[in-house]
Image (cartoon, rainbow, N blue to C red):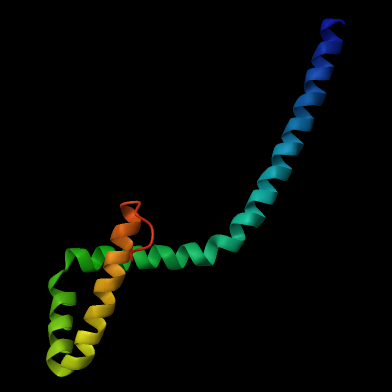
Length: 99
């Protein structure tokens, strides 16, 4: 195989690879398009979480106001939150579902 023929073959192979990668990029773009809205919502949730962690007085103050206004409902939600916190803590520790 001559040098010219080898260059022609490499050029053809390069064109095939470029076309293949373009098709893969298009397919990946279509797959990612489905996740755009859910990821935007998750991103907003993360932003809210970070804001609340920085401004901790805000959720604490709202919780105290809620507990003062509706103590029974606050206790009910506190119990639910406690159970949820234990569940996630056990999951993070690898213990599975709590008994």
